Length: 79
Image (cartoon, rainbow, N blue to C red):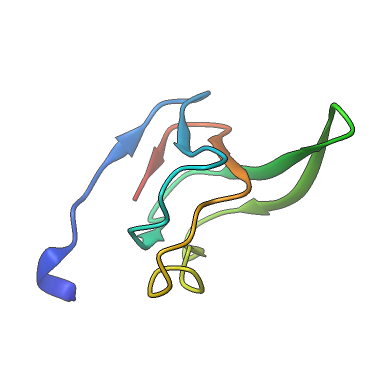
């Protein structure tokens, strides 16, 4: 698994995942800050904030499911 890691950078405002993306990758935040949110009854609902060391999608990676949340970078973020 380690040998298949791909490094990426996201700018402020970019999304790492959006709702209904395929959950076919695990993401580890190495720098930056992200916001996890969804929409409930048309209103944005913030679930969590992720920073260095946070792992995204570790639960759904092996079950071929869709994402149901948005993950947006609040500042430049490396994964």
